[in-house]
Length: 489
Image 1 (tube, helix red, strand yellow):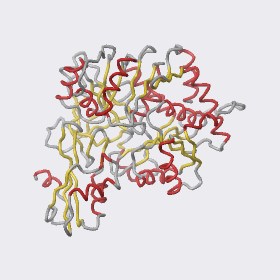
Image 2 (cartoon, rainbow, N blue to C red; image 1 turned 180 degrees about the vertical axis):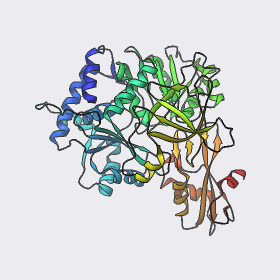
Image 3 (cartoon, rainbow, N blue to C red; image 1 turned 120 degrees about the vertical axis):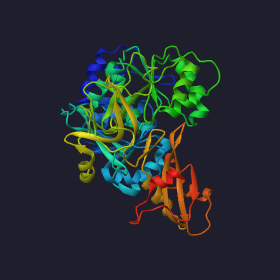
Image 4 (cartoon, one colour; image 1 turned 135 degrees about the vertical axis):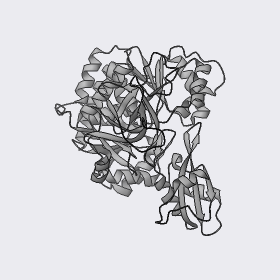
C-alpha cells in the first residue's frame, strides 16, 4: 500500500524533487524504480511479508530506499539507534524476532554482535552492497492492505521500559498526509532532516512526510557532534536553500551559538519538538537568524498530534498548537498541584498504534476506551491550543529522549560497590533535564568510576550527568522511594 502511494506521488512530482545528501541527488522517479528492484532482491533472498528487518543506518537516503523496499514486500522495518549499546540493541531485537539486518559498513560489527546475541539465523546486508541485491522485477509486488504492519519503533511509552510500537501502512500514510498538510509542504520545499533515524519524527520526516507532497528531503549526518559540525550544517542550509526543518531544542541552542553570517531567509518554518522549548532558545534563534520557532507535539505511539500554526507565534510560543488533521485530544482529570485545568493528555488519531507488541499489561494501562494515555500533563486554552505542563509518570525527558529512571538505577545498582541508587531529572536549559543520581555505596567508589560504569551499559543520554552520595535514600515506612524528597535536596 505504501509503495502504491509512492508510485502515485512520484508520477506527479517534478524531476527536481527527490532525496539529497551532499552532492548526491535521486529523483522520485528514479527512486521508485530502484526500490522495486531492491524489493525484488530482498524477496529473492527469502525476506517476505511479516519478516522483521532491523536497520542500523544513519540518517541518509539509504533509510528511505531500504524502508520503502521492505514496505513494498510487506516486511517490517525496525530502525535501531546507531549509538545504542550492545545490550540495548539485543533487548529490543529479542522482542521482535529478526529475520535480517541492513547495516551501514560502519555498523557492521554491531550488526554481527546483534545476530550472535539474539538472531543467529538472521541475514546481514550492507548498504554498500545494496546495488548487488537489486534484481529485475519479474513478479508483481504483493497487494497489501492498510492494516499490514510496516514499522516497528522503540518507545519507553507512558508505562516504563522500552517497548516495540508497531505501525501499519495506513497509519504511516495518514501521518504523512496530516504532517505535510499542516506544514503546507510543496514540491519546491527543501526539508532538512537532522534527527536520528531511530527517532519516530526523524524516521518519518526522512521517509514519509516530505515525500507526501513531493518535497525534497535533504539528509544531514556527521561523525562529529553538532557543536563541532554546526557551521557545515548551516552552510549546507544556505547552499541548498532549506525551507523547512525540525529539531529538538538542544539542537537549536547549539546552532544559535555559532558565529558568522548565514542567510537563512529561505527557511519559512522550523518546528521544535521532543522536549519543552525554553524561552531563551526561542529568543536566541529569532535574534540570531530571524527564525521564529513553532512547537509541535507527538509521540512514537500516536506520531504527530499537534502543531502551532498560530497567526501570532510570539504570543503563543509556549503552546504546541491545536490538534492537526483528524487528531483529537482531551484532558482527563488528574490530581496535580498545577490547578483544575491541568490533567492527563489523552489522544487519538488515524495514526495511533493499536498497541505495544506483546505487552498486554502495558496496553491495558496505556489505553482508555480507544484513547491513548500519553502520560503528559496538559491544558487547553479558550482557543483550543494545547499546553504541555509536565509528566504524570516517572519518565524523564532528556534532549527529546524519554528516560526511564528505573533502568538507570538498576544499572548503577549492579556495580559491586553500590548498595542502592535513585535517579531524578534536574531542569536544564539545554536538554530540558539532566540526570542526577543519588547513590548509597558499600565502599569507596568515585563519581567518575560510576559514570564510566554507566557509559559501558547505557546510551549516552541515559548516563547521569552528576552523582551525589547519601548514607541512605529517603523511603516511606513501607520501603517506597520518596522521589519528592530527593528533589528537595
